[in-house]
Image (tube, rainbow, N blue to C red; front, side, top):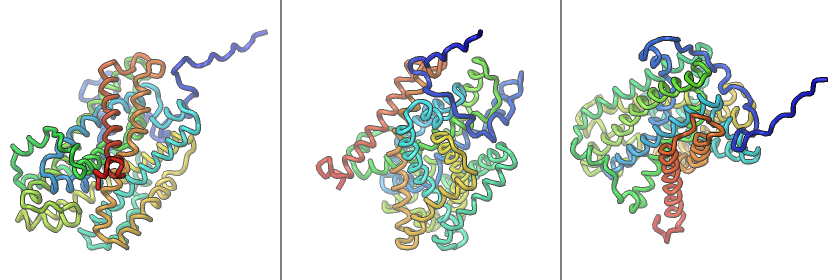
Length: 455
């Protein structure tokens, strides 16, 4: 009589349990990669996910921190934007590698590695980060609607709930339609800010100097607060979960060679898209520095105030309109990718599925309620402060996503031959350490534990 062989225990360091299913199942493997095609056709097939991720690096939260940084400190914090973008390129490359090699997104990987209480704790922290991000998108879109169409902020906040209909419509037409819309809006933002730079006439020597780091950032608590906000707005926790999932929408060969090729093209896609995001972020800060800081207006930190001052200070009537149009495109883009991230995180950590519209409405409600209260009670100044605070909250959540990612992708038992080489491990852990130390410094300064340095 045949006996069923006993199941061997998992190898040390391997996944504790099998994956609970495909990530983003409705879109998994739906975009074919042409076999035997040349370099450019394959690159085109893999292009798209990087731009969905890059959207999170130019959302309305970036605008608040970049405007504040540029108006208060000139070009100094360009170095933080550059450092953040280099960190983002490294971390997103690890995300896509995790997704392609293991067939898991980061949320699934956490669920399959950690105990249930730890996984649930990580999920709750991630949900806080997503709500903070969603809050920035809600406020940014409401402000844009107010500037362009004079819709009151409270009503603009409520109207943002309607973007659920756009997400549903796009989801029925395929993932490529979503990518096409996102890329179009990204290009629109780029054109708007390219023109803004031309209008503002920045001093290029000072711009280049701003990309060189300075220790003043660490010594000045006010500058550090904005720097951490920029970091939180640039390297976003939910983007790490998002990217590890959406790279799996491509149908590539499930062999070592096929995965290696997928990693190569997905990395090119991600890096190019994030360099475009670097241009947008740097452009916002450069315009703020060249327009406001140069003329002694160091107090411009609110999007509405920047809109009102741009045209008169630059002498170009179109400047403020372009600014508001780019803001609206940024807010709408962010809501599209935020929907996917929320779905991926909930399904990955908890292994339960909700209809996308229901998941989005829950997340939207958590963002709309505080945003509407602040907009109604405190008005424009309150929404500006809430924007910057939301980005600091995002930054404080970063270690809880970054550390598992670096750990998993460096583990040969989980990644096999695709595990990070030693030099990548060192860079990845250095990035994680910088993020943790900067956040610790921020907490010490602004809770008074550093002798009142943050007061």
